[in-house]
Image (cartoon, rainbow, N blue to C red; front, side, top):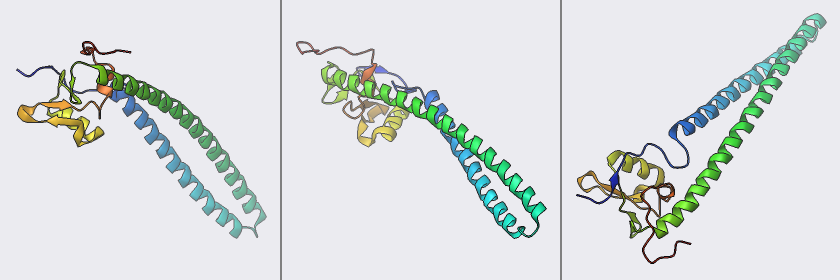
Length: 178
């Protein structure tokens, strides 16, 4: 029997798939709203052109200018809302980046000091085809090694995040753990 523990890869140590999906959804929502604001601006440009053609009729021009002003106020409010949402997203991304950096730092240290790391390969974890495919897609084809009997190993120099929260970590005997 092969050495190690086998588990599917359902999340990365620094953030769950649900959190990433939520941030992606929020970004998509902001992009949709920006598209609508652009369409509103294009419509406003068309109304300004119409107003220029109505310049001979003062009452029609006044009504169009008032309508344009209302549209501008609406667009300003929507832009303010988008700015707030982008600011919130920036905060979330900073938090995710900080957590990812911490996981990277801890993971690198653990991968270099773990007794289960042999020639940059983790012998504690055995990956199935789906998990290996996910890692290869995200970190490059050389992030996983193997495939014999549907068994892959992680190249921890490419995916040190796996080591960051690994419950199977064991320091090398006689090595420094500082």
